[in-house]
Every structure is written in structure tokens, then in C-alpha cells.
Length: 469
Image 1 (cartoon, rainbow, N blue to C red):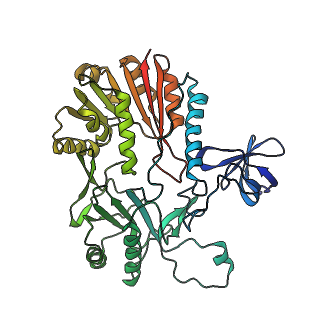
Image 2: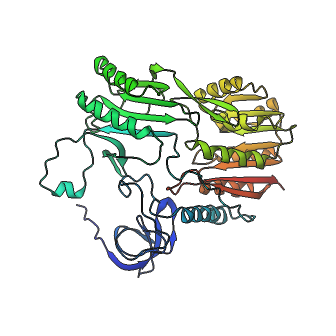
């Protein structure tokens, strides 16, 4: 029989720094590090632990005797519950400081290579309403506050449309507002919820896998277009038609109104057919005169404005003169490849997702770019000596891998390839630092440029220029 570990209270701990994943750091009286999930550096807090390990505690602040001058009043009424904006209680200047610090410390601690002074992090012009894609979940078992649970109030309406509570896969926070996506996002979400309830449509039950309404996705673009997609658990034609017709009539500005029938045990719809109810099956993004077709399954950077800043850094670091062959690894839908193509002789993009490569080729054709070519396959299997012999040795490699970074086989192939310059774009500076440490055998770090893509969160993008020794 397991015993519940006793929780410990530490009084008046001085919060000294920010840590990974939005936590802050203090020191316990016994010398252990304390990771606190709701404090800001500069706070003096009394904390209650909920996890103890050999070298550290995890804790939550339960009161404050001093508040940090880095604090600011959160704008969102759901802050602290939703989990989506972990740093909304920290002023933006301090957010930028700690993001830059994390990048620098990861590169020093993990890569252990000589570094130039980091370029100042590029801030986001918009600190709220910057996301172009949001996904909400329906639930017939909304999350209740402790006050609601302990009260005598009988809450009959348990339907919710919002976000999963962190660590509670079957509990959904019913949103009043979200400050991450611009209007009409909140209006569409609220209308869908109220209309569905008025029609008596059952919201999804995660445990029982029952109900009709599963998820709502809203995508917007810098061109002003809007995509709305609803996942239904099964095809109730009459009720589906009623809801979708109501949405189309209420929001005639929707460019692409879609639905998916998903009876599976998970919300992923990449292996399912997307049906068009009204409008097109896609919207368009635009960047520096280039247009990119974005469908329901497309990956596109979720902060359009900052994606432009990020790609400009990558292009600047590549320093193309017009006669270079460029490899763009993990090219996705080929946005970076097409963005740099006018400065290069030819760009070869490689990506593992077939649909992304189809989209990349269509986008290149639409943009009248004829000096790009895209190939699909597992990077560590496709990117080999035969591939290089077929397509030529590049002078520049741009790589933008997923959060887990590059496979060691891909890093080794880059070392064997010996391109003059590598531009490494990353959403995870820890795995980026690991890979740079491996590349240090033949490459030195010339420039480091953090970019803030996600204000109010701890996430940060980083671009590193490496040059052959």
C-alpha cells in the first residue's frame, strides 16, 4: 500500500531566477533547489512542496511577503488555471531577458563551445492576439473550481469548450475569453458553444468516448482569411447540417468552413478526410509577396508576423550571393526554401511528411519559383551520400528540425558534407545546443539570434550561424 508523501512548507524563500518550462528557482533551507510554478524572480514567497527528489523540490507559492518588481497584473481571467500563458504575470521586458538568458545558458552548459556575444532577442510587436491557430476541445465534464466543488451549488450545465487543464486529460476549462488569437476568434468559439447547446448537441465525454462534438480549430491569416474546422465523433447529418449552417450564416466572413468525422480514440485528424462545408479547403498566408496555401493539415508558424522576422534572420545568416546551392532540411511546406530562393542558385528541400511536400510544390508553382525542388522521406535515411551525389554538394545548409533536434546520423552527415555555412533554426535551444556540440568538430558558432515567437510563454526560437573551421 503506497503512502502519500508529506508536503512541506518553506517560509519566505527568495526567488532568484527563472528555470525551464516557466518555473522559477529558490533555495530550500536544506540546500535543495526549489522549482516554483507560480512565482516570479524577485518574489519572496512561502511555498508548499508537492514533489521531492534527491536534489530538488517542486512547489507552489501559497503566499507572498514581497512581490517582485518584475511582476505585472495578468490580463486574462483564466491565468493560473489554463496553463497556456505561464509568464503573463511577468512584465514583457523581463520575459525577454529570461528567454535570452536560457538560450545563452543552454549553449554554454550543453554545447560547451566558444560563443560570440548573443545578439539581443527580437521582441514580438504584438504581445497578445498574435496566434494564427487555436484548437479548443468540447467536453461534457468541465473543470470546476475548488469553490464550486465545496459549495452547495448544483451545477447542472457541465458543457465546456476550451483548453485541457494541465495534467488533467479529461477536464476542460470552459473559456470566457482567450487573448492569444484576434477577433473574431472569441466570437466564433462562443457562438459555436451556445448554438450547440441550444440545439441540444452532446459534447464529447473523454472517458466514455461518447457525444457528438469533439474539437474546434480556428485558423486566421495575415491576409484576413479565416478557417474553421469542427470534429464530430460520428456523422449525425441532420445536426451537423444545422450547426454548420448556423455558423456560415452568422460569420459570412469565414473563408473555409470544414468538418471531420473522427470516431477514433484520439483527436488527431491527419489520417482522416477533411470535408468542405462552405468556401475553400484552404486559406492563404502572405510573406514578402509570396503566398502560401494553408489547409487544415498544414504546418505554418503560428505567429505570422514573427515568422517573417525569423525567416529574415535565417536569410541574413545564410548570406547568399546568388550562385549557391542550398539544402533546406526539415523544410515543412517549403516556406524558408521559397523565402531564400531568390537569393540562391537552387534550393533543395527535404521533409518527412508527404502532404507537406505536395503543398510545398504547389506553393512554389503558385509563386513562380522554379529554382526549388522538394523531396520526401525520413531525414536520416534520405539525407545520405547518394542523395548528395545526385543533387550536388551545397555551400549552405539551413536546418529547422522539430523540438527533439536532429538525429545523430543527420549531424554526422552534415559533418561529412562539409558545407561552408549551416544556419540552425530551433524551437528548443537545449537540443540545438546538443547538436552544436557535436558539430563543433568542424564548425564554429559565428552568430546567435534569439527570436520571441510566443509572448507570455517561456518558449523561444533561436537561430545560430555556424561556419566551417
